[in-house]
Structures are given as C-alpha cells and as structure tokens.
Image 1 (cartoon, rainbow, N blue to C red):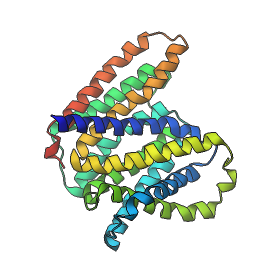
Image 2 (cartoon, helix red, strand yellow):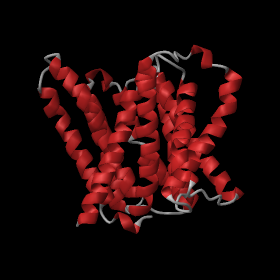
Image 3 (cartoon, one colour):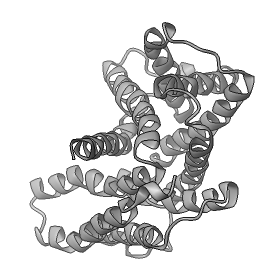
Image 4 (cartoon, one colour):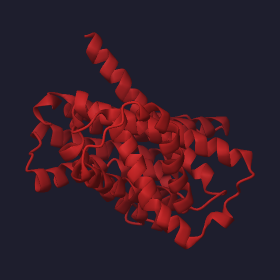
Length: 299
C-alpha cells in the first residue's frame, strides 16, 4: 500500500513538472532562440549533475553510449520542437497535442519491439485523447475547427513523434544503467549533439545574457523540467512500467489548464466553462485508470 502511494506521488510529481514545462518554456522565447534554449538546458544540466555522478561514474561501453546518444537525439528534437511550436501556438494546445504521445509510442513499440498493448489500455489511450480535445474545446471555443491546425501545432506534432521514438528506445535500452547515470548520459549526449549546431549557427549573440529573468527561467527549466524529469522518468520506467508512466501524461492538459482557468476567473469569465470542461476531465481520469490497470503485464 505504501509503495503504491509513493509511486503515485512520484508519478504526480513527474507529470506536474512536465506540465510546467509547457507553461514556463514560452517565457524563455523573448530572450533566446529555440536552439540556444535547448542547448543551454542540456549543457547546464550536465554540469550541475556532474558532482553527483563523478563518484559513481562507470563507462558501460561504446555500444551503450551510442544507444543513449540516439535516445538523446530524439529528445533534443522534441525540446527544439516545443520551443519552436510555442512561438506560434499556446501551451494548452501543445499539452493537448502531447496526449498523442502514448498512442504513437504504442504504435512504435508494436512495430519496433513487437510488444502488444491490452485492449483496455488501448481504450484508455483513446479516451485520454478525446478527453484532452474536449477540454481544449471547452476552454477555447475558437478551436472548434480542429481541421484548422496552425503551424505551431503541426511542428509540435512532429516533435511528439520524436518523443515517442525516444520513449520506445528508453523501453528497449533504458534499464541497462542506473537512473542517475542514465539521466546524465542523456544530457551529456544531448550537449555533444547540440554544441556543433550551436557554434555553427552562431545564435548566441541574440541571447539576452544580462536579463535576470532569462536566468531564472533557464534555471527552473534546467533543474526541474530537465534534470528532475529525466531522473524521475528513468526511475519510473523501471519501477511502474512505461504504460503507467504514459497514462499520467493525460493529466498534463488538466494541469496546464489550471492557470488558464484562474486567469479567466480573474477576468470575470462565465463559470459555466468549468462545467463544460468536466466531462473531458472525467474521461481523462477514466483513461488513467484503464491504462494503469494491470500495467505490469506490459513492460
């Protein structure tokens, strides 16, 4: 019982940090480019983690390093895509598009790893998407024409495909080394991958280095939504399984919508929007239950 409570609390912490990334990342855009923002997160995170891994450093071979380089590559593409998408779309839109990640991951897992997903979990994935779309429509009536996907949404959809590949590779290779070292490997490989592009494109001159707000946002994104989520994800994939981890991502639209709802209430908006969003919330919670149920049968 205590273990289940601890696991659920850890999952909620992980998903809350993930949700905050969608909201906070947009505040970095006035100060720097998507490429620089992503590179600085990885490089700074790598430096901050270095003292924690030096005493337990172990090189697991070239093969494992290349595997983590590939894992990191797809994660880098996701973060660059997120920053780029937020230039032309909203955090709530990106959080809703993000709910496609579990379904795409299931597809990639089936094709690449030959692992099938139980029917009740597939139903949960579908309900999660429907619930997320319902909340988007309730909170943003202007989004009723779902066929009118803007440039930012399309970019983030591609980024989510990249993240799904990352999740699939973590399922395949992520249990080979301890969570702390795995997180460090991902950030180290990401830093190495981003450094040449950073130097060649020379966008550093356009970064507002002297602005204190820039460093506050960058530090939060580095410590909590990069280092924190990487470590928790590595730990949770091993302790609760990837499907239960993915199930909690359906809470992200709800968590992202909270500050949006607060803003609407402050502005004196009609409280009926909360009731309009409630069926979406209930479908999301049902999706979480269905995917989490007997999740250990799918690893």
